[in-house]
Image (cartoon, rainbow, N blue to C red; front, side, top):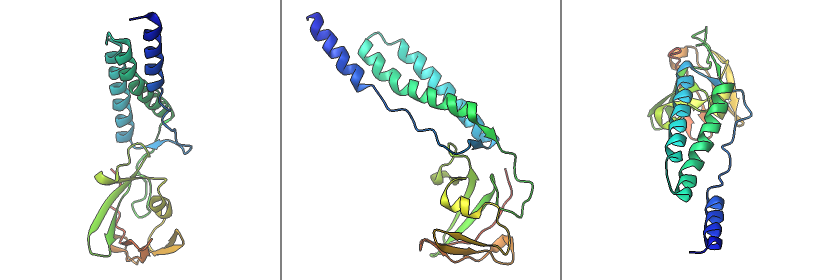
Length: 182
């Protein structure tokens, strides 16, 4: 094998592992205490993956393994550094960061979610980001308020425990219930 061939192969491998940086949100990095713990855990996991990649003897394989781990480590390091832990809301009758809210769909199914930071949001596990359209429309609202989201009204009823609401984006009839902060 010639040196020229090896260098070309290394250059190709280097090009293969150039990954774009993970996008850092322009919004304030609000997190719950649990969210900060998740960020720290992800940062530590990425650091372990970077260290493990450095032990790989084959330089091409090392680059392939290290690139995504190093990218994640840079991302999580920046997110931990910029994290602003938000205390649970003082008022239980006003929708706020950390509150759990219940949506009732047109077909009668209920969907419960918690308003959290961007990195800890996972709708499949019942949490949405505070910058999501639904969360932004509801934040700071209380019983009797009318909320407009994407040009449609969401009306709160007389009781916070079962507030009747109109359709939102033709997908949901919303019933808001606050369960307090965690």
